[in-house]
Length: 142
Image (cartoon, rainbow, N blue to C red; front, top):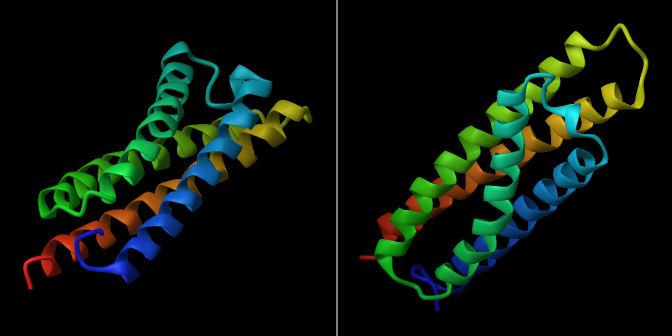
């Protein structure tokens, strides 16, 4: 069982599912057109890489939380903090792209806004998960 007991494990599972739903929705929007993050190669590479990194590592963190070790909670807090910051930055790129292309009414513009919003919401879920992991780390020794 996870460090901190069954209620913390339920909260962890709910947060991870919400994170994965947001990231999968953002990936679906990204796959329909590659220019939703930015018109520059660096912006596209950062946004695509962030989404792929989070969708690969998030299920691994969920399985890692079942181990129930106190050290794992601190590791998850750090990883969730990095993912949260990266997703908020990637979402900001998408919304900036929406703002720059807003004079042109195309489906890309609407997808950029939706994808950027999903990234930012997912980033906030990761930051909430970071705080939860820190709470589990702090209370695991009690």
